[in-house]
Amino acid sequence: MSKKSRIYVIVLIWAAALLQLFINSAINREEKMVEQVMSQGVDNLMEGSVKAYSYYGKQVLSPEAKELIAKNIAAELGVTGGYEISHRSEGEGNTTVLSKCGQQGDTKIKVISLVEEDEYGQKLMENYIMVEIVLKGSNGSAAYTYKEIVDELYEGLGMEPNTNIYLLSQYPGELTESEIDRETKDFLEIMDAVEVEAVEFEGVTTIYGYSNGIEEYVYQGDNRVNVNIAFSYDEEQDVTYIHRAVPFIDRSF
Image (cartoon, rainbow, N blue to C red):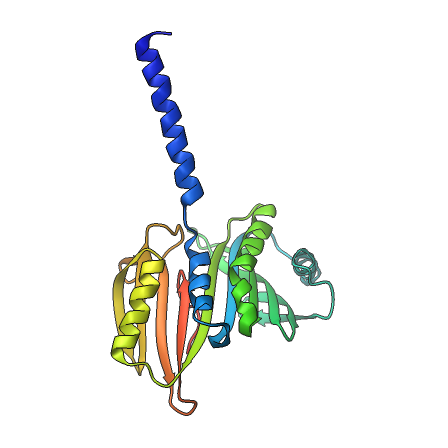
């Protein structure tokens, strides 16, 4: 082997070693988000939830077929009984919902059929599958674990899901502006994100951020966002609720 070839091989070996080092040291931002909330005390965590959805094709599905799909997904999640199944119409579309409520958490699986028009004005049935798991209280600390489970479930079905992870925590009293700034700064730092936009509306402060370390994102106006934190104060209860999510908070409060 020539000297030039040996140098080339050494460069390749070092490049491979550095790549492996990068892979091993990569930080999972969603997991760090959960750890951040938990490090502030289990008592302040009220809820952790995971919601995923994916396109399921254009075939026409009977209520029986949709019910079977929901049951099979439930079984994959370890939900084998004690659930309720309902069918409901929504305009020209329809949805089958499997739901189970428990002391530690709730599970909801939806098989959704929507009528949409193609470019030629022809009506087509488009199907989607949505899975939502809500973990109550300190059980919310398992939110990221369930995100991995749900993602693997979808991938096993040959689908690429859009997944949202959400954490709700509470603190006594009304946070000051400086405390909100500190919580926001800590959150963006742990997520390796930059602030994109801050909005205040009817007493709720919402901050949108973007992190290159997270693949999923949505658009807020013209900007990409994939980390979200919001603060809402309940005067009657005298508590401040902190909402954290990747890529966005998908509920009203």
